[in-house]
Image (cartoon, rainbow over all chains, first blue to last red; front, top):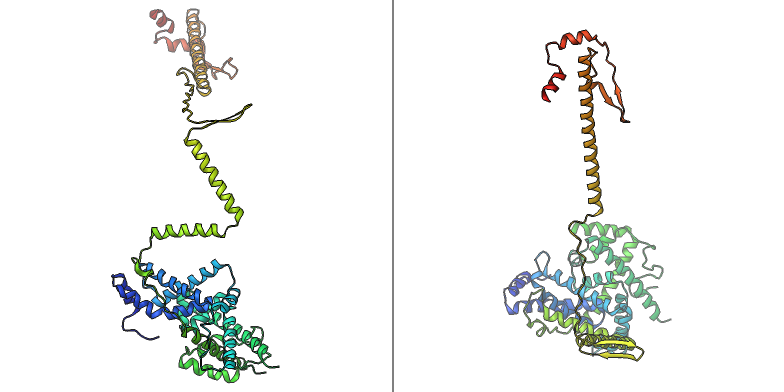
Length: 196
Length: 265
């Protein structure tokens, strides 16, 4: 974790004191990571963008509710996960099903391959990325959020435990189970696309 | 068969097939969160545990592919624009206008998602309620007789005077009557008891007087007579009754009861 000149907690204090740019600095620091988290959980760029915006709006409106007992990053992650969960509940759609339709509709720009890649390599890379996306999004939510926090956010086990409010051993157990399930799914996909 | 992830076909990733109890150590080692001592210990463990070796390689491949996906996602991450959303005052937990707006939006969303029959039913119910409210406000009287249904608006308000029964102050309820009857019975019994005692006393006095005159033995004292539960008087026998002469000798110094009564009369 990169130490910043002014800590997030100090920025929160400044924002509460009425400094206009203080919260904007927090947003700049964390928007990419929160977007990665929401995208990893929701699997849709549009939903992830909305969830990220809702996360920061909620944080801004409840800034006085932040008591400094946890880190700002943990606090933001918890808000983001809650928004993702409520979004999925509202949708009444399983994540995998929702993602199936969304990726064809609007996932192209995100999963675009570099311009210098050959068409065959581009197709292969897209397929591999799509397989990973499907595998991650097919995980149960409690496993998925741990994987995304670890792989996208690069949080430590303890930070994930703080953000989710679960014991450290639970985080490790969930991540271990998630990796085993991902391994199984990716192995299955590799077997399907392998030349016969 | 090697599938590019370093996974073997006979390992399906389930917990039942080949699992070492050091999964937590494996993760700490995989994500570089183990201490130097833990890493050294786990490295020695890897030499002797094929399951952990296999999983370490496989999980590394999974991480590599998830990382590639992450890089693609994050390379196209949009910038979140919060300028409009954050223009309001911060850190207020109570926001009435926004709450009202949300309720309206929720209601609109509910009707938008409702089927046609539900919308029609709701609209009809709303119209009926409005019509009834209008009829009430206009003081409309509805009559249904042989001529059919008729309405009449502007009916004056009827004032109904209710007759209230106020109990007379001298009337008693059942409990008070029972209490009064019980009290009167007790008073009557007490009066009878007093009267009986007086009569008995009078009889004793008379008997003593007569006995004194006729030099007969002393009559019974009042205490010698007791009443049985049936109301009959019983004479209690005295042990060691003395003779009339002994009594007379003792009473010679005292005024006689008969004399006292005669003086009183």
